[in-house]
Amino acid sequence: MSSLPKEVRSWIYDFFSNERFAAYLKIDGRQCIKSKGGNLDFYGLSSLRIGEPVSQQLEFMEGLLPCPELPFHMPMMELPGGHVADLHFFGDGDSVWLVFLDATPERNHQQRLQQKAYEMTLLQERERQLNAELQSTNEALRDSQEGLSREYRRAESLLLNILPASIAERLKADEQIADNHAEVSVLFADIVGFTERARSVGATTTLAILNYFFRAADLLSEQHGCEKIKTIGDCVMAVAGLPVARSDHAQALANYALELREAARRERFAGEPLSLRIGIHSGPIVAGVIGKRRFVYDLWGDTVNLAARIQKAAQPDEIRVSDATHELLGPDFACDPLGETELRGTGRVRMWRLRG
Amino acid sequence: MLQKKICMLGGFAVGKTSLVRRFVQSIFSENYLTTVGVKIDKKSVAFPDKTVDLILWDLAGEDDIGSFRVSYVRGATGLVLVVDGTRPATLAVALTLRERCEAEFGAMPFILLFNKSDLADRWAIPEGEIDELKQRGWQVYLTSALSGEHVDDAFHQLASMVAK
Image 1 (cartoon, chains in turn orange, green):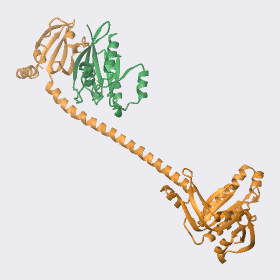
Image 2 (image 1 turned 180 degrees about the horizontal axis):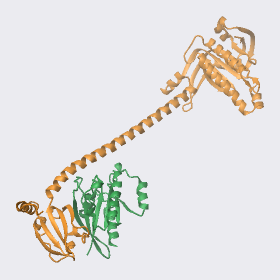
Image 3 (image 1 turned 120 degrees about the vertical axis):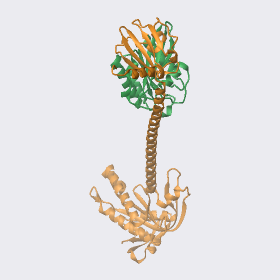
Image 4 (image 1 turned 135 degrees about the horizontal axis):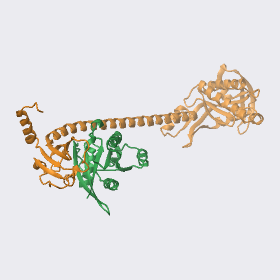
């Protein structure tokens, strides 16, 4: 300090005294105010009482004294009068000097800058939060959409398993389905001696037999453009010419029957192949869906009844066709005449054995 | 006369100033005005056998904990740690500030406030985390300077702790 010329020291004194409103307190070892002076008025502190405890008069002094680390600087304290002071403490024997220097403009300036910075930071934090929320909402939406379409595809495939595709479509459109089909062929096929065989081979093999037979019936119906309508016990019912009409329905179903019989012969269960009894008849039927919650697509009419009776009359390994079907089959299929046979509820009917 | 210095500690914009204003003057302002430096307020809390004057030091919140002036806390007998319940990162700020104070001045009573409980749809602190802090024996409050919820309870609790 000694190196500062008188003029500079004087300028510094004037600056702190006048521009920064320097004020002071001297606090004795009993923490009472010993003396006071400077611009205390400026800080609204002119009524401080000499000789009385400082912390009773200046609340911020509570707990500060005695202070082991003097000198001590506490910047920017807002005082009750609204001015902001930098507080400087320094020791003098067992007394402490406290100097007030106005920092109101500096505090206000810093506050403006800090305010902008914090508001910006808060906005950025909020933006990040909102983006994260948006993202997780989007993910949840995508998940539930995927779940929904998975469910839909499952329902779709279940429906297709029990109904022809075009029928399923119409059903979804809430259509009542009861269609007349003038020209179709209907087939019944069952396993010869199934009941006795089931009894002797046990449940597991029985299930394997049915599984094999019905799967073959399903797969072949796809290959030949037929529809497997249903199974009744060990009996399969299939149709050709449905739901889309086709002129070669008898031929399609005859080929289906020949391959189904082949498939049955090929596989052995407990050493024995399967032997089928198959009957086919052609004519008009009514096809439709009944039920509201559990759908059943089925066929009705005399044609269906007669096909069933022809099947029951067939011999093991025999594909028996009615006169009507035989006529539709034409010369490409070899058939043996069986003469007229009495069928229950129908009377005498001419039938044929399909050889190939 | 029983007079106790209490410091408000926490990250910026968690609601320290608003909590003091709610407790001392029963008012709330939606406008955010950041605190620079420190402002002192006083509020008396009456108990059947005594009255405690709380000298509340509303300290500037920092986004940079390193720049916190721990010397402001000299002479304090209790801390109010304030967390913004919609900003999970402010919990770590409050706990770190407490550690720095304890390292400098030793352990002292404190309460932990999860503020802005009125912002339920933006609340980001899991209940389990708050329970875990309570199980440490800490005094934890969910407060709203806006509605005043639990603000008086919390300060009264701290007053009874520092008056012992």
